[in-house]
Length: 144
Image (cartoon, helix red, strand yellow):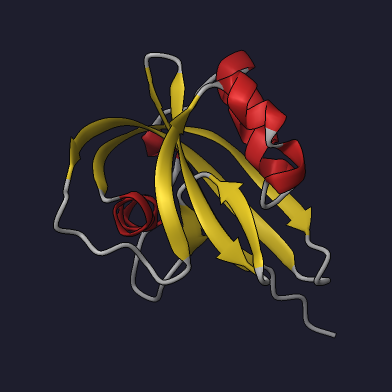
């Protein structure tokens, strides 16, 4: 049987101790996630991170580094390969219409995100933030 993991990206955007998070509806449930989504055809991982962040939060960002790469098997049996980036916020684009299913974007502290543990889209959400805070960040030229 052929193994076909879903390639996804996520972006950790921090500003003065607050993280840009997305409140969204997934499987008829409200959950919280970093700006994240699937890689599209003819798109680089970095381009996908930039696009997903804009589409889900209306924020333009500068992608600055790589936090890590993660494999996760969801409750649905699907394996996801997530590349998690770091970014700095540049500007809110108020005319951008958020993707379907997105309720709104929030700036939350680590403590607020930790308190939402049961509402996080996956365990990777908090794991990526903890790695961002405690592990090295890698340069973008690591990706080819």
